[in-house]
Image (cartoon, rainbow, N blue to C red; front, side):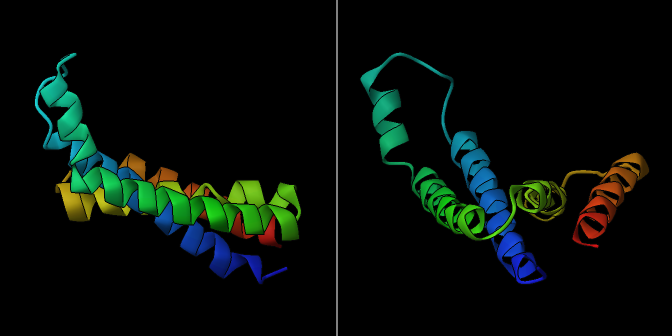
Length: 117
């Protein structure tokens, strides 16, 4: 059963990277408008392309995980993306993380360990 752990970690990293690339891409876009220029900007935004690639990788891994492991184990382990998302907020966006948020991340990680027991 422990074979799922590295797969779940990589899938969660891809998912978190997709979120990071999405935010970076949208930070580079101007205010929303129903104009041709705005939509062309979306289609030529390299961050959004990277987002799609990361989400695609996460989806392919998720399909493999769902096929080969019990859903009751696989789905809770997908919450590891929250842990990587918190780390990404610090590294890429220089956000302040409160002690309570760290407690929440530790509870999520602890829950994943309990699921695997």
